Amino acid sequence: MNLSFPRLPALLSLALAAGGPAGAAPGIVDLPLSSRAGVRIQAVTALSGGSGSPIVCLTPWTLQPVRGEAVTPPTVRRALALLATEALSGERRIVERDVTVRFVTDRGSPDRLEAIDENANGRPDAVDAVLAGVARAQRLLGVGLELPGAGSIEIVLARLGSGVEGVALPSRDGRVTIWLDPSGRSVATLRRAAAHQAVHAIAAGLGLGGAWSEAFSTWAAGATEGGPDERATVVLGQRLARLAEGLDRDDLTLAPGNAAWFAFLDEAYGRTAVKLAVEELAHGGSTRAALDRALRRGGGGSFEEAFRDFQLWSVLTGSRDDGRHFSFAGRLPAPTFAGVADMLPALSIQADPEVAPLGAASVLLSPAERAGGLALRFEGDRTTRWAVDVLLVRSSGAMHRLPLTLDEDDAGELTVPLQDLREALLLVRNLDEDGKAPRKYTWSAYVEPGYPAEIAHLSAEPAGTRGGMIVSWETVGERGVLGFNVLRSRAGDPSETPVNPVWIPAIGDTGSAAAYSFLDAGARPGVAYQYRIEAVTPEGLVSRSDAVPASSR
Image (tube, rainbow, N blue to C red; front, side, top):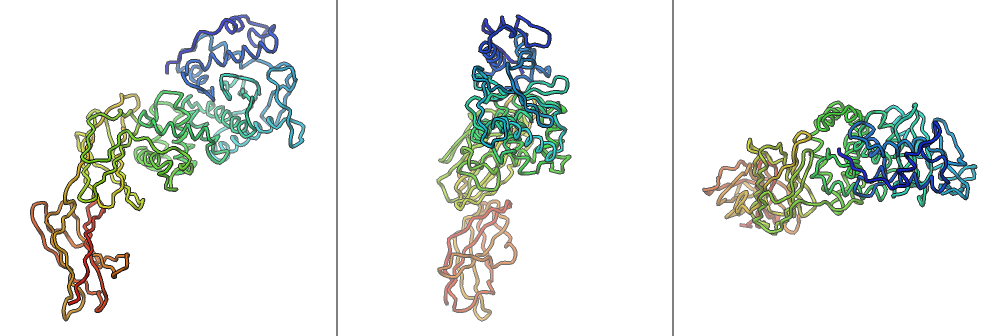
């Protein structure tokens, strides 16, 4: 990642260059308290200035250059040194096990912490909050995920400015320093922020890079509090809306939203999968290979299988939440679609946004037609490894997901019955290795008349002395029919029962008529029945004829 930083204001440049006694923060020894806080805030601005968007957690921007993933400008090194060594004038310290909290309560200090102590334990509630946040994070990672701890942690409560909530600095002599800005933040927000930064400290010790460390910390902070808060929910929704840009997108502004991947692993595979993913990602190299190793180690199958499910989860959000996927799906916005069509035929020739490696895009089709079949065709860039599914949503809300098989030219076609179909979602994934360029694809959708079978005649008559009813029907044409079911119901009763024990094999084709008959030996004399025929496709999808009453003669 190439990070850019603006020119530091004159005050910060002079302050950082001034130097000071050994062990002191560079350039702040002779500055008044208000100026010290100002220099610190300017240092934070220097660290976050290259992001191009608001930052809440600054830690990924400190991990990237420190871990050698980018050239570190001298001004940034000085800013990091300032935060790592600055002492607060008149500070107090609270020590609880391996965690030290530093803060100031003097009225004249710009870093003054409100001394509200509702539980009357002799220390500010804000201090209790950060200690609780760190303890929760340590318990989640140490006990729940069995990951090694971060060692000694020092937390400084002071102003940071620029909207930054906190930053965890690299370990110095076995001690991690965390800065948190308590200004205007509730106890719950501080507790969550402390947990977030404590997870960063542990992740850094494992060797996890900045982007995935931010994703992991965002997930873990939510897990300690029973789920993502409002701000994290917004971030998750924004990330899922940009899933086409790929899980491995080298963009730290997208990194918090990748917490959705850890939430998916947690809820779909369990916390062992989260632990293994963190361990494998920390080893570096290909993200796809790391996630694949993690899933296989945990017995969860391959990354491709998991990514297929992850994309499904990503579109079942907001009003589409079915209560079976993300536990917080109902709080997320509705999914964003790369293409939308409500009239057939529809065609998109490489018009939808391109999809990056480990990226996914969805196309929404809402056909008004209810007869025949919906034929879908996909053609992907031949230099790319694609995977495609079709998600069918019935009028009842029931869903059926089908793979769309691609040939050696990365093209494939699938036809499904239109009857009772409310929507069809084309789910497209780019399975290329990390680092390759994003690619485009083409899709089309049109009506296939008479699919899967066009029934020209249907009747049901008494079988004579043998008893029962003979159900007869004729088809004008058949395409892709595996077999037929004969459905029976009593007049006025909407419930139907298949009366044939096994499918009645299809014998017709697209160009010729075929005739069928079936004896319903279970029909009782004197009962008013009605029948209809159900055509079954190889995918297990069905299309039903209109119902006809049984003749009484």
